[in-house]
Length: 398
Image (cartoon, rainbow, N blue to C red; front, side):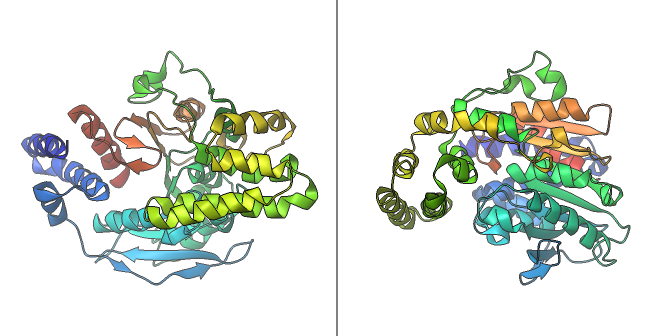
């Protein structure tokens, strides 16, 4: 499969060169970025590395926000750059140290972008809260006020998973909307309430008949069974409504331990198994109903977990700051990228957000079969690679 992908991209590079050097350079840069992020081996990777610039990674620091200091890290390519790109992880305990975020920051900087990664505090604790949106707004304001980072007083912001929706909300706020040059939401939500219904009930908004007009590749979208990770995050955030007050702290500790194991699992499965076992033991020591709910979590029984959470959803008033559909929209161009079969935030969220943005600002939306939820992994057809490269080309050259 990798050999096939290599041949397809080499053909695409050749076609790009055939169109002329001026037109090909942005496309080649985007193709190189995709190849390096996907960590392909062999000749293809060596070709992609040729154009990569050296990157200086500064130590982790903090920047001020209204909710306290927030971790940040700067990645610098050599020479001058037009502006800084703020890069935001999804819900992950490692924040700016998350391995995939670090890798992408390096590769974006290697294309010539100055990249500032930021880690909203609550997202590192698997919490969805308005304070994360506030911190992104404050990060935009802080970076735009630094002449070294923002010579023209504007920044780009790219965010992943649930952070994608928060970034769209933050970029639409009056205090910073004129300081945002472009927004990328990669796998983000349009309306958090509809995502929670999907995670708990397995049903999303129907795929509209004009999906292909709303997003390139929109006709390839399908809705898979929800991933248990998203449902467990929902459970953690709804815990005060799910268990008695005296059980909330110990229950949330057990659920958080499971989520930590899920975060570790991608890099070290043996270590993750130990933490999963710890989470199960913690659950077995709980009182009811926490014990039963934690059993669903440890068994990855997303159906029973969803049925347990679902009755609570109508009683929850979600803050508008967590949903672009309920907030002022950005005036800057918005780029929406989504895996066509995303099982955490369904790709119908991208379609709904694209429809909402149409006529209000420039919007570019792509549903790709090359990616899963906020992660580049699969190789399918040359057409898909061309679409993904074209999307990143248009974003990178803004």
